[in-house]
Image 1 (tube, rainbow, N blue to C red):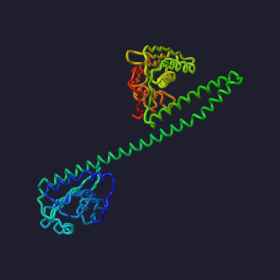
Image 2: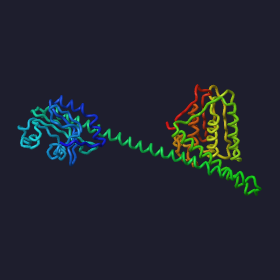
Image 3: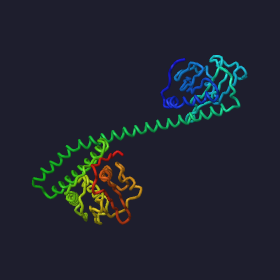
Image 4: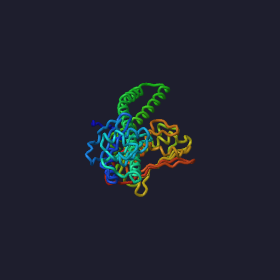
Amino acid sequence: MSRTIGDDVATLAVIDAVPKLLEVVCRSTGMGFAAVARVTESRWVALAVRDEIAFGLEPGGELDLVTTICNEIRGHGEPVVIDDVPADPAYRTHRTPAMYGFRSYISVPICHEGEFFGTLCAIDPKPAKLKGSTALPLFELFAELIGAHLAACGRLERSREALMSERETAELREQFIAVLGHDLRNPLASVQSAARLIRKTELQDRAKTLLDAVDGSVQRMAGLIDNVLDLARGRLGGGFAVERTRDPKLAEALRQVVAELALAYPHQEIRTEIAIAHPIEADSRRVAQLLSNLLGNALTHGAPDQPIVVRAVTRGRDFEISVTNGGPPIPRTAQAKLFQPFKRTDLGSRGLGLGLWIASEVARAHGGTLSVRSDAKETCFTCRMPLTVESPATVSAAE
């Protein structure tokens, strides 16, 4: 007998789960040797063994395939039950019982995913009363259980492989965007510096208009770079962190966000209500980023002939920021994806689809929520967060 064994998932699953089952087989039938065998066109390999008769076969051991009755079962797919070889007309002259020294034998096929996998078998040097007893139904039940276990382990392994592939793809993508975002900063800074130098010279009106367009593009690219770097930091850096302090300049930071975007959209009416009546523990830079993303989204998708309303107010124990715009409602199917990174909806949006995701992460890192309400009249994004917190929050963007 040679010592070798396969390393496929099904094989390992049997080795791990079956020994106790074989013990039950031996106890219930009185037979001294039981095994689960992997039987192929060329090999008979013992995957699990219960040996109480010193047969000498261990897990991983092989028998010559053509000398086994299991090979015949592989061909016809039917169980074989022998109470006593000398009294059995079909097997009393068969070479296998004499070769391996058994008088009683039982073996049933094991199927895995609709294909023959191997056998559950037992032998003993003494006769046994197997036919007409519970032995055959018991073996068939156990064989079915083993086949089901093999199938479950196979599905689990395929799921693990798919998950690993997805994780590797996601990590590679996030590493790529992190490098991309970092490397884009230098050429963008050069463009911005060149634009500033050009603006100091005498320019015609047409040139000033083009330079304004360049400035707008630079600002937009800078925002995209900030977004992808935030994504990379959140996914690869272990969390999306905020530093919450009582910043008296929070209201000023929010007004500045509105003023900057109003300059970029001079024809869009933006109504503002900022009324912060109580101290707020917040990361002012992140909260300003949240408002910038929400207002930018409204400017992009809202109706240009209807005003956008920005509110930042304290209500009870909460701080609330909302941005409301007119225009077509957001479909419910799209609403479910609004706060997911890279989930482009059917709204004709530009960019990477990170702005609303980052806004939702900022809200979550402050212990708050970001929600959307959209109907035929208006669309409103609302962030609510508690005024105070016991300790700074770090929330993983990968959750």
